[in-house]
Length: 452
Ligand SMILES: [Zn+2]
Image (cartoon, rainbow, N blue to C red; front, side):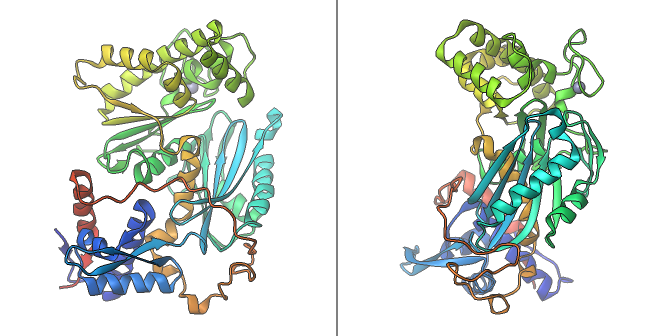
């Protein structure tokens, strides 16, 4: 049911509805005007007005193809434009930093990765410089204006997205990363920082396997382990922003010491270092992890047992999380996706055995739609936030430079280059109404504001 706010001004209502419409197209892909009319609960004239407004700002386009509406009238199909407004997405890992240029709609237009080779490479100064170097290369391939920068880090972040409060595996405390990057990159666009697992959850919840699933856990594992927890449709932050630091649940009090200062944390048993340690290799480096996983798939007994033992410890923590959170779905990201691939029975059986009492129907353990790109795409959501929340913050095209994409730059930091093949994570196909999209329709109608 649409709600009415008598006090809302027309401009406030227009901006809100522009954001609702653009957000739908960004998350769900091309949609006909007729379908937008149905699922947003607005009349055709209002939808036309909103679409024209977004098109004037270069945020959407309408394809010449038409779709037959129920009463026989043809309807244009509306889609976001990913070529004019883009975000820089950054994923800071423990062994590498990765950047991508991501357009509206989630298309990855360019990406670069730089692996760390020495422990000193994890210093704040080195990582900020590495991001700057990669950003220069990625932005050289941009075709539009930079609207924001989103950064994912393996640690806790202040609620305003400005400061990394604690990242144990990087040895960072109270790092004002947003300000440092703003200065180093020299961009006017907002820089926002978020926790890596939280951003993976955002990507999968908004555009991936967890779309419309309101109670889910996205578990991300590299050297460290974290969880993005969405409960009742909202991200669980906790009083101090530490919710989801599940890698530091103490599961083996007699186990190894952890970077956080404790002992026997979950990530000392299931993180990448634990996996390579089980085959007798010193920890460090993605290549060793990939080697162990590849040999396990090929049937190497020692590597297979290392993955199985890691899966058993993974199930121990999983069961505890299921008991505490009662999610509908658990998405296993990072190295956990590989462990699920290699030994699904070990995980499923042990979780089912020990959670039967409170989960008689079981729980879905699933791979992330975006694989290793989930966190990066979640960072892109952070970078695109300003435009998605308030499309009217983008000036109409008449105030922008000419849009000849093969020649003229449209932003001083984003010189126009030749058009590139777009690596699209793929939007879910837009289907006709069904129970799942009915829920979506209700949610969208509730988010639309009308003036009485
Ligand atoms: Zn710990």
